[in-house]
Each structure stands twice: as structure tokens, then as C-alpha cells.
Image 1 (tube, rainbow, N blue to C red):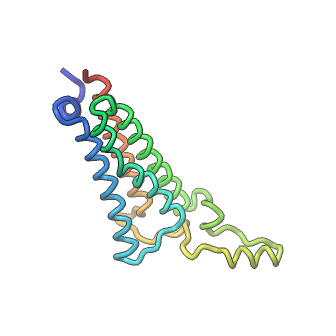
Image 2 (spheres, one colour):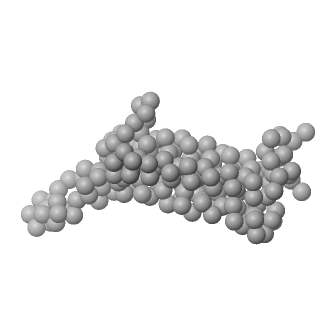
Amino acid sequence: MPAMPFMTDLIAKRHPATLPTLLALAAAAMLSGALFFEHGMGLAPCKLCHWQRLPYYLALALFIPPLIFGRKALVPTLAAAMLLFATTASIGGFHTGVEQGWWQGPSTCSGGGISDDPALALEQIMNAQLVRCDEIAWSFLGLSMAAWNMIIALGLTAVAGLGLIAARSTP
């Protein structure tokens, strides 16, 4: 009996693009949520928020290789999905640490110090980001959007990983 019957069944008995399509839809849902908060609720994203979105944009295309190349594209596609979701989870974890003050974020969007040189200080002030990475704009159950992104992306990484294991063990 396979270790993961559901995932093995999903991989073996369905079209090879089924799981990658579900992962692409999850990426679309994450982007839709981010865009809703940005445009619907007026929460402007910081630089790290934009970085967290990039892997999701790339993940939107996950269903295409298995549609074109069939089952032989499944393993590399799921490996790419794991990498993309792990990347956004890592950025979300870093962003959460910046928000909590555990470490400093990029100088372009965190509350870094101002230079002692008046000319450089003026330049830093004039080029300062309006949206700071070290401030929590919204939270739910005590967790910021960056923390929620990390949690959800870790779950998607696990799903892609389980699918990858099942795909490698399915003839």
C-alpha cells in the first residue's frame, strides 16, 4: 500500500496537470488576496510584500508544462512549485522577522538610521519609502500578512513535495 494513497491516486489516476493546476489556482488565490488588500482595502505593499508576490506570479504557469508534455513534465514541474513556494515562504519569514524587530530589513524600507552627513541624510530622507517593511499594516489572530503568507506557502510547499514524492514513485 502506498504511503500517501490520496496523493498517489491524484497523480496516477488523474490528468498530469491536475495537481500543478491546483497549485497554480492556489497561487492565483494568494495574489488575489494581496491585490484585494492593496486595492480594496487601501493597504499599500512594501518592498518585501512585492518580493513575496513574485514566486506566486511565476507559479501561475505551473499547469502549462504537464498540459503540453504530459506526465514526463510532472516531476520537474512539482520540483519548481516546491522551490517557488519555499522561496515566498522564506521571504515571508524574513519579513515577519523584520516586522517583529528580530532583525533589520532592507535599508530602503526599514527604519534604519539616518546618516550623520547632512547631504547624505537629506538624500536618504528624499528617497525614503512611504511604506515601511518593519510596520505591520494588518493582522489576523495576531499574525501579520507576511506571517500568514509564510504559513500558507509552507503548506503549499508540503503539498508540492508530497506530489513530487508520489510522482516519482508512480510509473
